[in-house]
Length: 94
Figure (cartoon, rainbow, N blue to C red):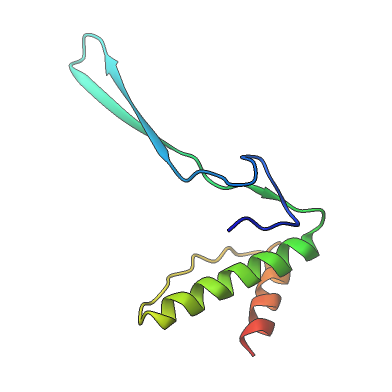
């Protein structure tokens, strides 16, 4: 679900596909496989709007998973940058 107030560098409907490439190292007998993900990137006008809309998206995801009896694991960043996002997520929870 694209967030309408944000600008996505992949267009209105970003893809979540991946690509794989195989790299041979001549003379070594070694092969390396690399995988590249196309991730959704959103750019918001300001951090307040980003915090509000992304917290709503995460809250919706949590509720959807709980509705199916499933858990969700969140990897949370440290520092002061994500604090507005965390505050909004807490507000939505209350």
